[in-house]
Length: 50
Image (cartoon, rainbow, N blue to C red):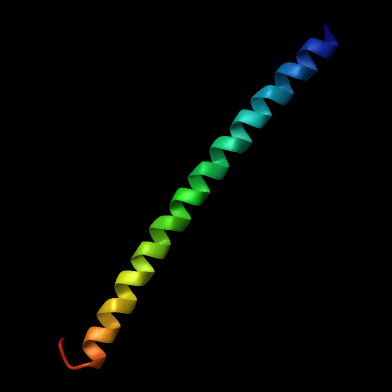
């Protein structure tokens, strides 16, 4: 019974860890996209197109 409990806890921990990785990766992509847009706008303003 202890073995089954340990395996169930390990499975739940693994699922939580993997879903958190997907969330962090998605957030990183969003931040990267925002950074690129800010960078593009800064280049436009630098050229006097603001």
